[in-house]
Image 1 (cartoon, helix red, strand yellow):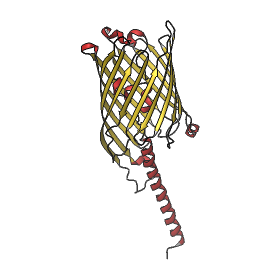
Image 2 (cartoon, one colour; image 1 turned 60 degrees about the horizontal axis):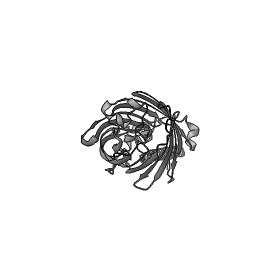
Image 3 (cartoon, one colour; image 1 turned 120 degrees about the horizontal axis):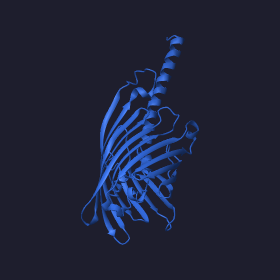
Image 4 (cartoon, helix red, strand yellow; image 1 turned 120 degrees about the vertical axis):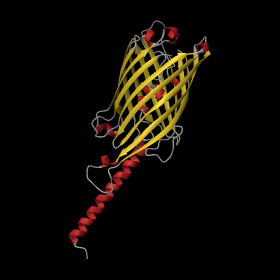
Length: 335
């Protein structure tokens, strides 16, 4: 016979361990859920080649970019993403543009870490010279390192959790097309196309469709750019962004973006994003405030993102409305 006190103690110990196992399983489940959304997806408003490599340096300019995003300020272990980008372009025969780029990023989400980079290439050609209609084709190759630090699951020692750090290297690829002119743009792309199974954090293939128009009267100080972005995963989970961007005097710009889920899916965000930007010659500075519209917003102070970008253009491609000469990014349409 087991003494009553010892029996109760054993039951409590078993319950604690079961709860811990459930917590770990939920942590992995949570990771698999949020893994459906790429860590850099939120940042496409400031750097659109993250979701479509066909936009890489299509102005033909050279640019350097840094972004820093912190999600759900006030919640311990909330996601944060830092990214550095470099892209440049050069003209070929018949005014064709070749763009190459490099994006490096690091994402920290609780016990999970993701770090890696994308190598980008794009090719742009003229479809209709009178309407200045162009088509861009792009490819990206990426290497991502995933890791889990098990010690972050709990502050209490338990032999069930070894506290080990697990790493893996995952290659991937993306592709896209982008049709654009001074009056409209449309793009279609696929990211995480290799999507190898059995990894620490499995990503579904992501497909993006975006389009918009540019509205501006002659000699007007205002320019309006309504647009949308539709994201569809390979399991047909759908999410849409509706954006409106307003530009003042070719220097100041503001964008409002509403994100909603067409397919109801746990832990996916519904949010309202405000983007404030200032472009002075070669330098662009932007700030994004992301206000969640779900119950989790009651426990945090929103998400915040900062971007600084420096752009250098050549005079022989001035006809592309490069911001160095025009004062504002005219053709970077999906920001």
